[in-house]
Length: 425
Image (cartoon, rainbow, N blue to C red; front, side):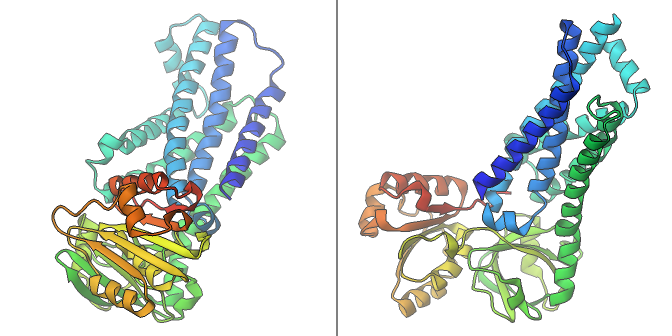
């Protein structure tokens, strides 16, 4: 599905460029080249903004077929391109008009912002997009809480709304072209409908239908708890081991934020379970949840499931709290399964040992303040005979996951059989 989605996005960009080509008879002089560069980058920025929002609309078919982490990476990469296109559009257009009118760039900027239809709103939109891009940069992202970063991203919706009118009122490609206007409206209204349903209405419908509530909170280790959620007819969710939901617990501290947590046990018709380590304000607040707390949930999401498996033998590699989705897979994957788990303080260890004994699976746990390095090709090959013939699932902190993936490749496991999802959203 990844290649299909990329092809669709590429065809859309080509169609947008065709709008400019159809409307442009010739390009003459420096001002003409600059203004047309502004038109092209503006069209692509407007189209790219709609694509960015669609990628994060949480459409189940895309979340399962492509993977949430892949969509998130595409969204982050595309965001940088869109901001670059929007800034280039702004500067090239102002410069081109300034040359044509014989004015300075500053004077032309003021004239356009105050007299051109919707240009002032579009200027605000560019500033909002740029600001969102700055707070999403890795250096700034490390200093922000997940909840703050999450809420700041809602300004992208405002930027899209502010920019939309400007595109139609001043874009030469749309002026007098009814078909182009209808297509642009269809694009933006279609994306808005996806966002409204999947990000806002669907969680309400799901929670109302299934009546989700906290049943119990079990302390697994210092700062780590398992939360069991009960509800009605949960089998209809079709949640698979390895998947996650975005959870919103309706308490005073946590109602406003929906955070992703994986299922740490196979779903049943009566309950779901997550296991959470206190790494931030939201996760720390879950240690104080009380039974009976209402829950809103979005999902299930993620593609780290048995559907990816191509071999009868499977290796699971977990680091830290990344054990949660792999614990569910450890119990349910058919065939020969080996689990390597590295953590300072392993959680769910008794469960893992019971599963290994019940199904005859192999379990290796490396614990302590400086766990032994399991992730070099020689160690992996020694612990897992016939490693190149395995499928491998990896989940854990980014540095650990990168090291494990590199070691698996060096040990002969094809990249297409190494399955990984990042939960660094």
